[in-house]
Image (cartoon, rainbow, N blue to C red):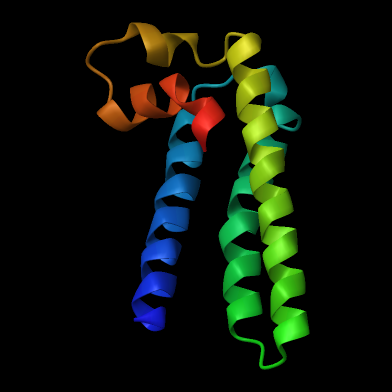
Length: 112
């Protein structure tokens, strides 16, 4: 049961990082080394720190990596809010033909 939980969590984290990469492709080019890069790194850090921590034997070390992963998630959340306020996500909100995941993310930023 515990293994299934971790696998499902990794799947969700993987979906999140791929979604962030897809939506950040549409960010302004002048943000390539700013918000775009930072958002991608923080989103990727969520799953990478989780995986590294899960591979550790000592529970204190594992918990430390979980805290780092959670911090990266909070960082990504802020950057998504920032991107929304700067209208970097406005095309995703307007375009009815975009993937449903994009609209879901933009609409429900506060909940994740």
